[in-house]
Length: 553
Image 1 (cartoon, rainbow, N blue to C red):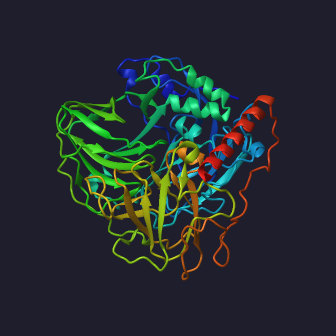
Image 2: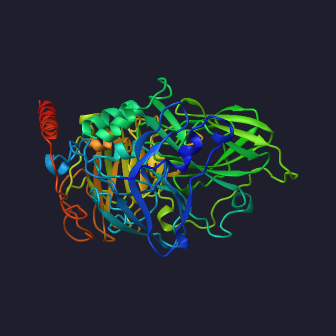
Image 3: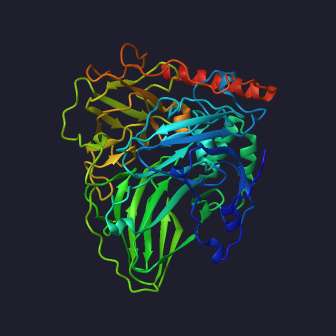
């Protein structure tokens, strides 16, 4: 197994200002290749940039974060995902325990294409796919010609190891390009900057890796040195701790802020010190342009991006000097150094713009009545081993919570979003009612992930295409791995009825994929199980049975 020191790590090993300049992830343009892009899940030695020895983690694509992938709408993204990990002796395996939920399978993976409006049917974005160690799978993800340009991302999503992989930094940005002439010159000509924010909660990761028998990752985590505010919890930007980004006075930049979050915490990216007189305007959220750009952040220069969410922001600084941003309450997460322009600045005030056309799947639905039977409640509740949606833990196989059909106006009454972040695959949703509006969250905005200070929230969407399974879950990966996840289904019929809270098999017409069995690449892998692992697994089974009995009392 190769151990690499990433280019970002080499940049970060020193602490001088020159070495702490923010580095952009490398870029892979999918339009320029006819062969699948190879993304490896493998061990990597990194050093984010504070005084600690390098440590091992799992990376996607050879760096933390991985390379940014760009693609045009109307094309097919082909990814050869190679799981180069090896099964660790002593690690918990779902093939041995038979357990659906809990921290396990640390060396098993797959990919989730988070945010884009793409199919959940293999060889596309089916997160029930299992890619064991040493196996590979070629994903083919068609992007429709009318797909909204925007900022999305990719990360492993195997149930049981999502927290270990995502919390360990395995993630990368995915950008659907704006077609030529789509944007006004002010936005099109702006410097395009990808900023991947990642939260490293070492204590939580040590706990999860210990429970999963993930000894190699656990050892790397325990080798991290530093004070409580650094070594035990820190935030990186493009894999770097407290970097500096140099920009030119008076020039617009487009920031693609990706919060690769895996716990129930908003990013809270906040402009704390503004000596360079910077202004920011919200342009898009979760890869979808807002309908009231420029939405000024002058009165509240904070981005409460939900975990897994993205925010595209236009920023311009009028004065030479510096500005600093905090994130997740960590000060100086990112510093701006604004230098004088060599030319006379011609930058103007932010100019209003909305797309001339929007795809059918993003046509407003908030004013439409729900289709018959399609107004369902979805409540997230509990923590750790009590993590549930609608009082049920996740079950694999043909067990579906809600169902709908193509063309239905679907309403979801979300509860628990003050404590749990809600993410929905395939179909973005529109914020409708039952929440207090703010600069960032407004009625009519579209999201694929939501987390806000509200006891309830009504959302709507209309699946006009892409039938099949729809995973919904808490984007706190610790909770999702523990069972706070469920499946919905969109039937391939244009009339019919919806079901709510069924938690049973989906049957009848309009079924477009295998709803019974998850695909395991290479078949069930051979497992070498140590006595320690068996004891660990036996204790997990006993603990799970005790919890079940307690909930029944």
